[in-house]
Image (cartoon, rainbow, N blue to C red; front, side, top):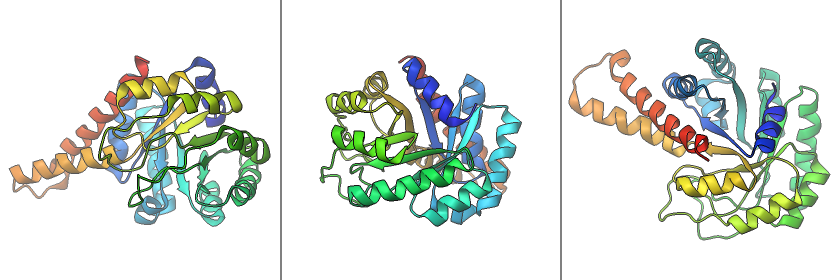
Length: 273
């Protein structure tokens, strides 16, 4: 089943998929081990930074090989694609889904660029996600408010033909300085205005109960990235403080296990939603 159909399926069922970013073999293994243990589907995400770090084709080949190894229902998604050139390269490389992030553009320009991505992705049968509203990225102010407007969301979906829409309802990328509070009422209004699966970015650190509430009113995909990096690096740091071992094959597994347990915990939230 392709990702567009899967997202529609979870939308009908009132459920959602976790989408986890990976950064190397070990974080990829941790994510897929969790999915395999719980027999849950998962979306594997790569950003421009991770693609430049690992290399596009090696990252894709590694993801495909590990999906086969763990026998997991999974898809490869470009997270926060910032140019048509990057989107095109990822589609050529075999990504199942791409996101074009034009959220910092004027509405008309965001619509224009996203529509071009939708047309491009149609040639590959790939899913397309876009973003509307202000979801603070790393280093950006979390004080700025730019929540998604339901009427703009309706126009955006109709004019772009996008398959999934990331909305701004109070989440942010990176660590939260205080407990986030999602605007569930606004989410309900957006959900009533559009018929595409909705996406929640900045899923790291959002309380479980808010995640469940968001899923109940339209969120079908939840992104987690910051917590994945944090779990891996903290576990690795603890390990290095306890040993003089220099064999990477011995010091990395506990960090991989930390990622596995993190993702299992995230998946359990949806299983009880």
